[in-house]
Length: 264
Image 1 (cartoon, rainbow, N blue to C red):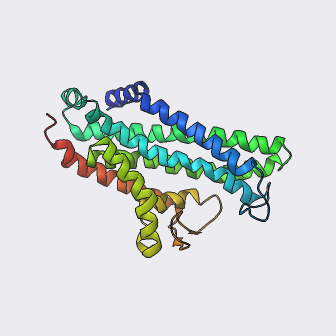
Image 2 (image 1 turned 180 degrees about the vertical axis):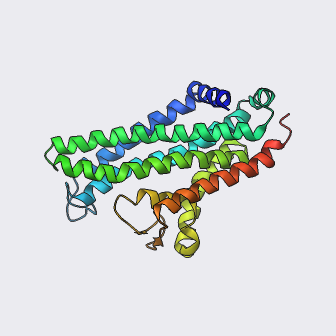
Image 3 (image 1 turned 60 degrees about the horizontal axis):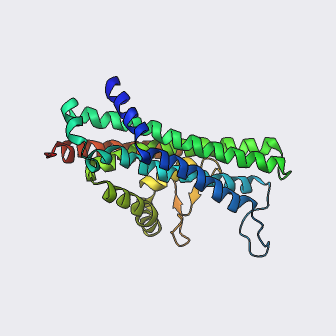
């Protein structure tokens, strides 16, 4: 198993998609943090909390959650790139036990999600320190809010990497997997969460929000497209188990169906 994991790490380091996602994480988090936290807003029109408050830091640091979405994409790429680049045949020749191959990719995806979270966390911390340097807030308050937000983001990003692998194992096609994953996260889940909250709270996106919302102690959270409705989120550790469950179930299903199919 160690040999398989090393091989997958090497593959991840040598494909351009990995570095693109890392760079995209840095650019998006930096750009949106600057827009949300430091661009002047007319007070009468602004919906942001007063600068320097705990709520303001929650808004500023919430930009780091972009790492969660990109981690889902990375997990999908880790497993579907084999089919896209026609390397799946030699991979299966080197390791005929396809379940072990999927497990190795599952493990590496956890590390990939953590890497994206670290990049987002570093950028977020830089902006937090910038707010301290600008005299917007004291160091203690900034660090307290950062400690509240980043661990939940990191946990969600790590688990979403594994979730992406599971979905990719089932769907196999890279473009289809990424489109389905992002559309489900951005459109389908908020609609279900708004119309059937009791179901929505058990979906991957809302489970990730349960992890992220530990920061603001928010047990009620409105989805981004929920039309004002709210979903009573599960406890954070239950959310973590739900995401793991989705990833493992999808990967297992993919291992026994799609990955067992003839690759030629």
